[in-house]
Image (cartoon, rainbow, N blue to C red; front, side, top):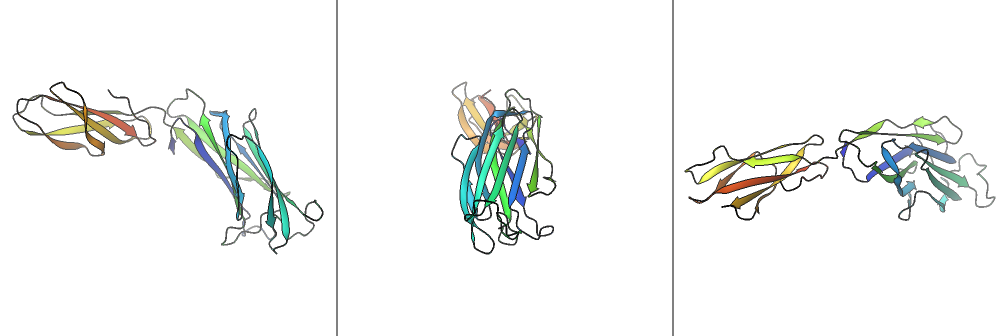
Amino acid sequence: RWVPAAAQAHTVRFENDPAFATAPAQEVTVAARLDPDLDPATFRLTALGFGPHLVRVPGGRQSYATRVSAANPDGSPLWVDVDARFDPAAGVLTLTLRSVDPQTWLPPLDPFAGVLPVNDGTGRGEGFVGFTVSPRAGQPTGTRFDAAADIVFDFNAPIATPPAFNTLDADPPDAAAGVDAAETDRPTVAVRVTGTDAGSGVEAADVFVSTDGGPWRLWLDDFTGESAAFTGEPGRAYAFRAVGRDRVGNVEPMP
């Protein structure tokens, strides 16, 4: 659950569970709370959906509303009013899916009409809302971002999502390359590559070599082993450098 100091993608999923439900939900409300270590100014909606319907939110929006032409389980027409609103001061996203009868412009009277049918193998009773948000500037590696949401179907009690969290990896790794002896009469030496990382761990390293103090050139690209054989020429001096990359994409500067 390590994440970089960049925009993180979140998805809240919900379902009209057939283990508990016997009729469609006519109104669904989702309230997702941001961790206080996330920056509400960077919050952006990405997409939302229910059953077969996907609503892509135009770029850069913190709130969005639209009406979707849908259908009830029996195939009769239904409107769904979508209202996604983000409150930066409270750090809360509220999504409401509200069923509307196209003939009356009111909530459906039929208890078996509604936006979210009882779910089955087709996924018709599932929905989601997605957004991105970045950590507040200056948060250290190890900062934990907790995620939680409450989901309400019609007038029932809120259902809490299972708790989830991510952990920030804000620092690059520290990798090194070297040999056991400063001088050798063997043409081939084992170059050891080591690395440490305070967060997600070292994923790979680029290893560079310099000959007789000359420019650095890439020798091993995305190397994931512990050592590699290097064959040199007698009378030449070689130096090695490693640039590490961790598992969330942080890359250390050239040492």
